[in-house]
Image (tube, rainbow, N blue to C red; front, side, top):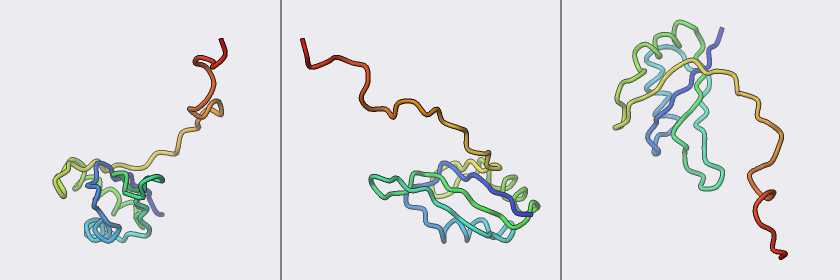
Amino acid sequence: MSTKLYVGNLSFDVTESDLREMLSQHGPVNEINVIMDKMSGRPRGFAFVTMNTQEGADAAIQKLNGTEWKGRALTVNEARPREERSGGGRGYGGGGRSNRY
């Protein structure tokens, strides 16, 4: 059974192949998704990685969490399901002053 990992505090110049090389030392890697900023197109500093086995995922967490890589202390743990967001306001409009007096 595959396991999805969260890998955080990544250097902003990290590539998918960098991550694959580092993580494949701990077990087979199925998929890597480096999260990119929509506006700038640059990496946001974290990724989700699917390891093929629970043993590989556990080994990666144990060996890599808290270790320094490319000048940053990594955060590696099992990914949690995305939390539901409220459907209200999207951060624009509403509230504030009106242009009318």
